[in-house]
Length: 289
Ligand SMILES: [Zn+2]
Image (cartoon, rainbow, N blue to C red; front, top):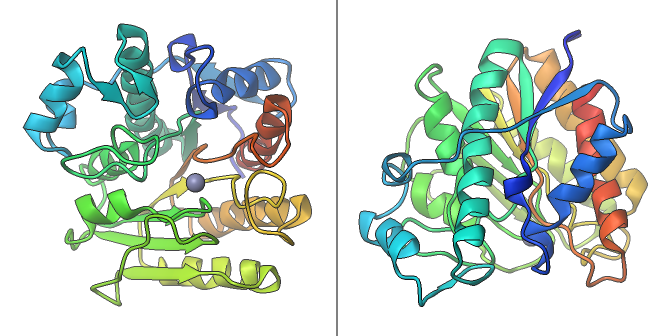
C-alpha cells in the first residue's frame, strides 16, 4: 500500500466563476480536500500545458485558433484569457499527474472537459484532450498505456486521437450514446453502452480485464453515470463507490501507476454543485486510501 500522501493537481486557475460545472466544480472539490475530507491528500499547482505539447495531440491550426481567435467561442464559453488559462492549467495537470504517478505510483488532477476533444476540433465542453496528453507523457517511460473511460458519455475524441496508436488500449463503458465510437482493433479497443444498471459493475470488470497488459492506467472518472447527476436510473452512489474502489484495487494488484481526471458530473439532475463535488470526492478518497 502507498504511504506517502496522494498528490492531486489543482490551482485556482482551473476555476472560472459563473460558467458550467466543467470549470467550476474543481474549486469545490479542492475545498473539500483542503478540509481533510478525502484523507491524506496534498494539492499541488501544475505547469500549464504549452502550445508545443498541444501540437503533439492536436492539429496545429486548431491549437492556433484556440489561442489567437479572440472573437471565437471556446467549448465552455466565449473566448477569454481567463477561460483559456483554465483550460491550459487543467490540461497541464494531467501531464504533471502522470509524472507524479511514475515516481510515487498514483496521482490525479481535478480536470474535466477532456475526452470529447478531437485532433482538429473541440466537442462537448472539451477543448483539449488531456487524456491523450497524459497517454503520450506516460509513453515516454512505459511501453503500453490504458485509458479507462467511465464517464457516462463516450470518449470519441480520445479514440480520434489515439485509436490508431498501437501502444494505447482504450476501454469505454458508457450509459449514454453521446459521442460513441466503433472499435477497430478488438485487442486494444473495448466499448460497451450499458442498458441495464444491474450489469454496470460487470461491464466495468470486463473493461478492466481488457486493459490487462497495460503498464500505466489513466482513469476518466466521470460521475455523470450517477442517477442523480444526469446519469442512468439505478446507478446509485453505492455502485459508484464500489466502482472507484475496484479501479484502484485493480491498479494496485498489478502495481501499475494510475491517475484520475474528474470528467463529467452535473447539476442538471437536481444536485447542487457541492453534491457533485462530494461525488467526485469518492474518487479522490479511493485513490488516497
Ligand atoms: Zn459525460
